[in-house]
Image 1: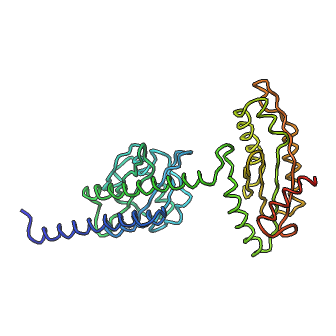
Image 2: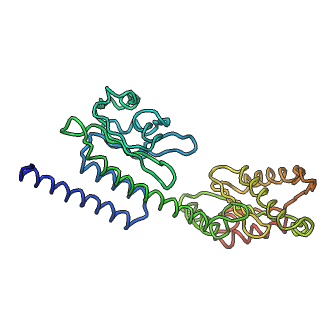
Length: 336
């Protein structure tokens, strides 16, 4: 039989638990800001379970490694570049198996890795770790280290953490949906380059930035020559694929700070931030030489040759508004 004091303590804990889930649920429903939601979840976990240090690790799908998205506590800054392989350490084991794990004394567990302790100068005693599961796979891990004022975390803590990990998973899924929707609204379906709608937004932003900081930038207008003949002679499927291939050539021969857009039909636009018009002409020559030296669909026996006409306009020398810049670059094609 539990004493009245124990029953009151348990009731208080249940109220705190409900309040915890309410606050996290409210955060999830009130914003799509992923970082804010994850921060709220981890702060509530910290308040409720009072770990010495706590971390949110996310899985890099390309490298299949865990990295520290959020880390709070002693030596947390030293963890920002740390990566853990699947199966490495407690967190790596949880990420690989998809099972929660409570280790009351890591010195007695062969799965524990000292890598993080060596970097943070922290001595880990107990660890509780739960996976963050998406619809099909584990996408991250929540890890708490050393329970303040206690020798270890408790088994009763795991269901709480699992529920909060579910909230984190929902937030991640929502963020990915929002990101995908955003990508669809700014991307051209045929070439996977940015579309004309996004060009207008980026140009306005670049004009504001360049005006403020006294930068120059350039716009290149690219118009494929006689492209209608490609469609007429080979069909629209070949034409669409050729547009994608040309867009890929343009994109892969620009800097990371540059932008490539499909403006419409057989027209492309390249935006070169912090680039004077003279330097933009070097980019024009490079893209022109690439197109002139290449035959497309040779494996299919078509040997299609593509040439293009180019026009360049510079900010602020040639124009100071979005419409004028595009008009000047377009007109420069005719002059060329």
